[in-house]
Length: 431
Image (cartoon, rainbow, N blue to C red):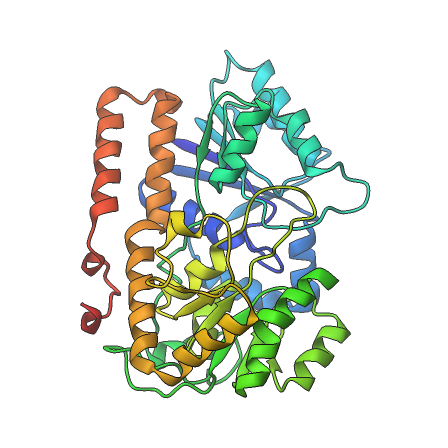
């Protein structure tokens, strides 16, 4: 089939947490022989900030990491929808696109329903937490633009229930976050150093001891990757991160974009190193420097959308790094708490969990291995693409017949039952 994808950016993941999964989905579709055309706006703010903050070297590193992925830049005021969508079978517009583009896509679908015949899907994975001045609220956007869409792919059951209650579209499927295991995987010491050197960082820090992957001693106890955010967010990070690190005297390093000076002062006072922003594809090397990581989901969303991204948890576990997390919605739908990852309900529990992972390497290895197995057997981009193809056949996109649908469903069942040992980078000692 011919897929046409509208992303905020394929090239840039600067403060753009969705980019990792979107790249993985596109690459998986290409690997299966489908045609994929990706459009992103020429003036996208993430790419603009990437060039300003990091330079073109990161763009070259992206091209080296994803040699088969390319996007076409367009001017929203001059975009030719007829030419771009003439032969499309499936068009998917991600939530980060501007409301005007989302509305025009729906209008084009309604106008050319018989002549073009493509299926139009909205991918709702709201990883951003605030709207810019002058744009309508998120719920208002959805109510206005989705009437002509064939369906919505939502990243949580909570979002799906919201759609069902509003009745904006007829068909809604839960399509969760996923990890690209071609990029996010356990690294040997040589692999971590190679990634750091390729990005111009010189020799990468040491990594945690992973059976079957070398005996390099970690240089840090905790590596955390995320954004700082508002005052409410700072309070959560203080309870679940800063204070436990300070109390235990852990060696820690934080990575992320747009940390205000107040946040940098807080980190400095707690003895925490700040590494700045790093691109997604250098996260495995960064995580390899620590014994474990922490997930601190936001307790409240300012925009009212019921979704908590799981992408940072998936990335860490795909790299074999143990995770301890504050409570988050739908964790149980993806993982088994206290088996795949640890759950801490408050700051005191977080401190005890950190101490357990820090003082007991075998326990940490057990948690990391369990989480890794769950991710590679259930939550990869391969799994999500297989789910997407089943949805496309349900919609009769591209004229798919019953035999194709049955083949897709059979492959989906095989993936869900696949043993982790079938994954090429699964450490032999973890068997």
